[in-house]
Amino acid sequence: MQINGQRLWDSLETLGRIGRYWDEVAQLWGVNRLALTAADGEGRRHVVERMRALGLTVTVDQIGNVYGRRAGRLDHLAPVMIGSHIDSVPTAGRFDGCLGVLAGLEVIATLVDHGHTTARPVVVAFFTDEEGCRFGTDMLGSAVATGRLALADAYALRDPAGLTVKDELAAIGFLGDAPVALAPPHAYLECHIEQGPVLEHAGMELGVVTGVQGISWQELTLVGRSAHAGTTPMELRRDPGLVAARVHVHLREMVASGQYGQLRATMGRLEATPGLVNIVPSRVICTVDLRNPDEAALQRAEADLARFVEEAAAAEGVTVQRRQTARTPPVPFAPEVQRRVAEAATALGLRHQAIVSGAGHDAQEMARLTRAGMVFVPGLYDGISHNPRELSTPEAIAAGGQVLFSVAMSFAEEAE
Ligand code: HGY
Ligand code: MN
Ligand code: MN
Image (cartoon, rainbow, N blue to C red; front, side, top):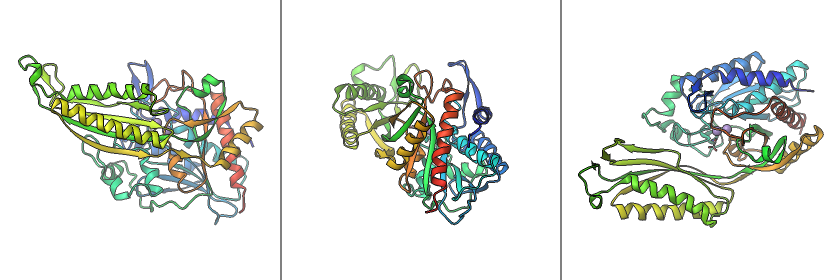
């Protein structure tokens, strides 16, 4: 059975119009469906409508995860689950996450077209707040569904305006009542745009994802003393902005030192208060995102950075409060899933290679419950992502969708 690549491409365009905004910098339409905002709610309702139109039974759980289920001939058996997320960063393209959910619906639509019922049930899922950039921790919905995060703790998370996850779920009408604990699926599959340059530069048509690298997010609150920019002598200052700048430079120096393997380090958020031209800031809040495929090297980087921050703050008479907001170790994907993805790619004559995911994904959480794996579709323009310029080709999307279909069917027709 062949999926309908054009229908999949069109569905990405349609969903991509929900929450779209004109990005002045990129001079392109971008997507902003930040988790649990009205735009996210609109995107969710659109996908739920598509699930229902495909005859799926839709369940919304207490953290807002949504599952669309298609019965199987042996309906008592554990389902094959295909999922990802449809929430986005505020400056997104239309592929990150959405490809995995819409390719899952394309699998269902293909089965409907052919009037074929699989042995096992098939479930298409989208998880709440995978991006984590509003409430501070990533993979929120899938982490709760797989027991890494407690529901009460997730509910209590607040965004910078002080709004809670629970209230915002209710506000968009997705505070469901189904229990969050997920029964282990027979297998979990996720198709995702690579979001990096590896496949494009290697001339590959598909990536067989071997796992996800470790992720460490922390928020630093640096408090000094606000003072007049003109009258305050430099030696009397306690400037948190200087400490933040030193930390930022130190991140690059740690990577350049080569002592932490393939460390990647980012200071994505940097907010000075009061943030005005003629006042030494009283407070700076900044974030640090550390990534590493090697857990021991990631822990070394965290420990060394913590020491550096303490020393830099003390030298400037600034206090520091550190809050770990996300932390997941490197997660390997099931060899059996990898094997089937590679086999399907070979059968379709697709140039493919193994690749470690630089980004976090819901599949890393689902790997706690079952055999999980991912299909990567190459991006264009060095695979830029978390940016309106994120793009792939209709051919690559169709190929990824077809491999996803083949692998899903191989699991869905297993009666034991
Ligand atoms: O940050 C990540 O790796 C993913 O996009 N949530
Ligand atoms: Mn994603
Ligand atoms: Mn993302």
